[in-house]
Length: 259
Image 1: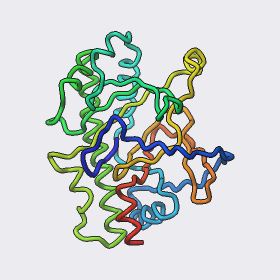
Image 2: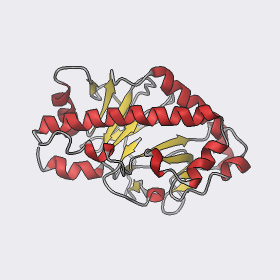
Image 3: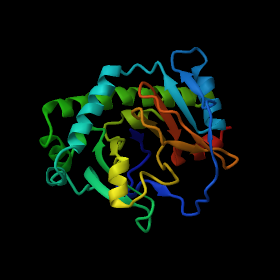
């Protein structure tokens, strides 16, 4: 789930950096891990933001069964015939989408569901997504968004506390606002066999996220990498039971003005 600061063109909300230069990928276990129940969690989060702009959170409070259930239901949706999935698209900006990524379609391939995290702002395309799936999918999505919103707010409030910003809810109130433009994006990448058949690169290329923070969860498939300050790339070991927090462009500007 991503937490946005203001409405944007979500269909193109990933900023692809065109000047990518391949560099060796390093494997590292030094990515910060923050226990949200730790007394010094806010200090650890600020340190992780300063040094990495990325960290893993554990003891986040989201039920593991809910995370598994959402993944299973999403897999079920993406396994539907293409003709049925297409009835929930194209995204405007919410709904089902399938496209090549990059200015020339040269970065990768992905299909996804993009949903507004505010049920009151659901669109016809959102309804179309759920009309193709069992009721349990809608229930899992709504429960998951509610829980992850709380994780987002907890992290944002720890950031403001750690930086000494008042009031404490300066950032989290944008998530709790009834007109919040936070969204949930469920990505599906093709298998290696499908990738070979399509002759395309898999997934996203190098990019930054424009929002405040992104709350990421993956299954047990590896592939996520982050770029360090020295330009080296670090592979992020997958962990389906935890969340990864990525600091977005919108947070970096005010954040670096305080540190």
